[in-house]
Length: 113
Image (cartoon, rainbow, N blue to C red; front, side, top):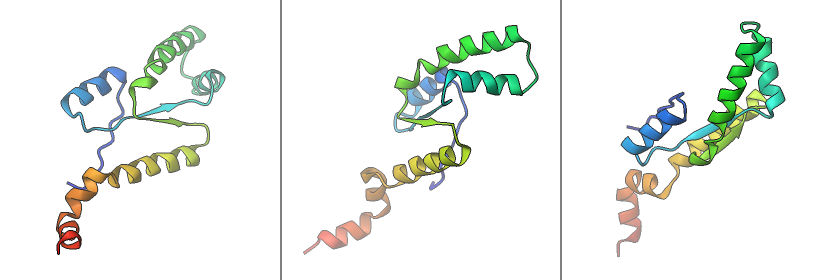
């Protein structure tokens, strides 16, 4: 109660969460460009070019599912992306359904004769 739960999962996991918890909100984090994603993979210095190419193909397939999500955040500048994530969380705490539940006694008192 009163806590946000953040899961780092792929699109298939997100589909399972949505089936189990239809009220769940989803955020898809995208790179600013394919070139930036490829550069990030290369800068890790962990994978061969073949592995990077395979990861890029998987990333393209994964990114095609962005339309299934409620929000998109572009991870170009970390601080901006973090601020946007915080804004999404804050905004979801202010939805009518959540506010009605939190302020039910106040709303009843305000609307009583």
